[in-house]
Length: 152
Image (cartoon, rainbow, N blue to C red):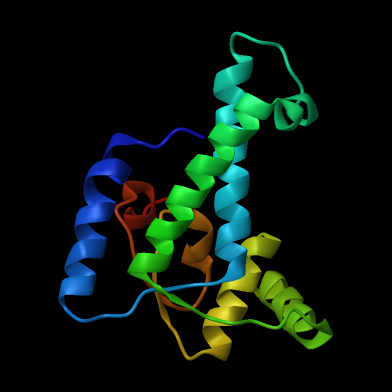
């Protein structure tokens, strides 16, 4: 998954404005899990363009592993500096309520978990480029033109 130009140009500026206005931005441990997965998958894809290697082999390559962990650590530190951590309890009740979210909207499990966490914490605004959130009942801030186009 390669970042699109508008994502690189618009979102950092928008997040900076949001923070300057005194708004709060939040993250959870789920954010770390998804972030680390995306970074590792992207780095594997780049590396395996010239080297046919499985993900497991990529993880066991000390040089590749060190590089990926450095990028994950840097990205996570940046997120921690810009936002506040929300603790969540992943128990049966949380999972059941997340399943209900998935039944109400075409969300994947990660998105349903995020929305349930937001609901539990009284948060109803989200900055996202993920079109799946359009189906959720919340205020969305996005630079994704496909999400902004109501004819889709």
